Length: 103
Image (cartoon, rainbow, N blue to C red; front, side, top):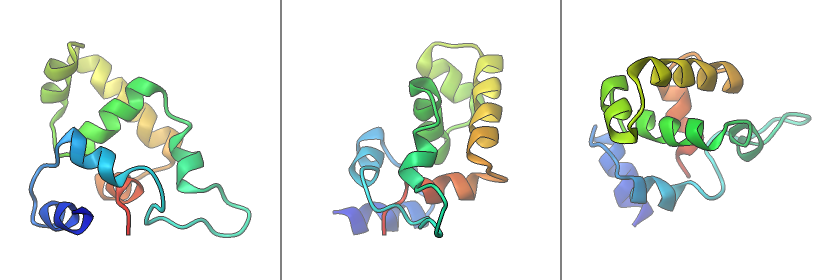
């Protein structure tokens, strides 16, 4: 099941929230080095809303689509997105996706 989800992701398909939740719980691809935080610790820095938005970003949704689906303003999504990348020290979306994919 999880391999099917990963295959779909690698083929450029959008993942559903249910599929993301199936692969989130443990053993993230990013493995911590000694004296570094685990991926779970890193993700725990996000607020509940930031986690929602991070999942939608990793599913391939655009800011306007996220805003509409969550009933918030486009500018609010942009602010959350900026905060997510700042808090997690990310440079691009591929790094965000790696945090949410299980081996």
